[in-house]
Amino acid sequence: MANTTASIKYLSNSVQYDNIYVGTLGVTRSDLTSAFTRAQVDHPSTFSTAIHPITKAAPSTTKAIVYWTVSIGTYNAILDQGEHAVLAIAHGASERPTSLDKVRVEVVVPTGAPLTVERNVPSITTSVVDLG
Image (cartoon, helix red, strand yellow):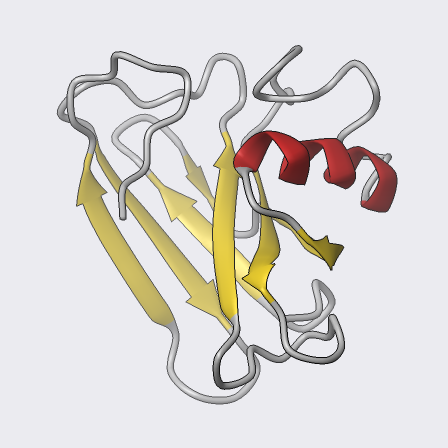
């Protein structure tokens, strides 16, 4: 999923973006905190040392990264059989969804059909919400 050819659209009750996709990480990560820490290295123009949505400040606008939890072979733009990838969204400080909001994420690639995931946000009691 090269960020020059793919895009991730994001829609919620309060905000809409045509492309929040920053890119993929060049290494495997097992958790969200270490993934955004690595994003500071791989994508420093978006996630600087001061911008870390888990441990520090949120980005000014909503952004998304893709990272692998299981990788077979190379870290390229293709999700191969047996690999597991996670789409992580860092909401802008003033753009975070609230309980019962409906969020929709659409992954658009140059060939094939787009993948759309729509979820209702549950009551938020932690800083990280896994919408499955």
